[in-house]
Figure 1 (cartoon, one colour):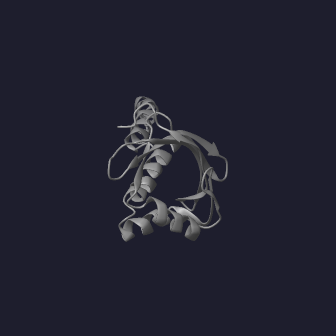
Figure 2 (cartoon, one colour):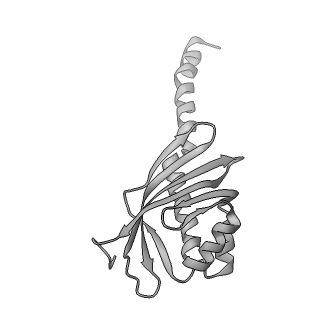
Figure 3 (cartoon, one colour):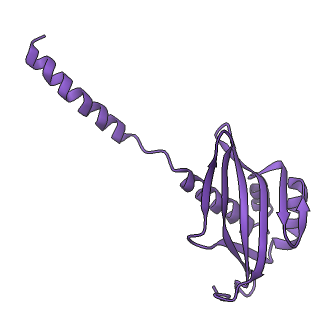
Length: 164
């Protein structure tokens, strides 16, 4: 091979590699992944009057999920948590993440911790009169994400935007 052609290959090879890398879509960030999961789990929560949506909601939780609620107490299993959801939530109120409050922190070799604030809106009046803070522990196993712990606390009246 002549020297000019060899030199040209050395110049073009890195450009080709860079363009190949740029063509591959970037993996979603952990923040984006958990934000999408938060949306999905609570979309099914908000529509849990439909038994299909309640079962979809159940699929986001580890069977041994621990759910800590400052006013409702503790549940130690997915079945107990779903029974409370069906009894107290479905058809009564919906949950909305307060924009800009979701924070996500990686947990090495496990998954992620998400925390933020959400408001609760009456299903009939659509007034959003309740606020609370939350912390959710997500475990990633074999490219699947499941919730292992939930803390919902600091429940209080929403005095700022009760009508949403």
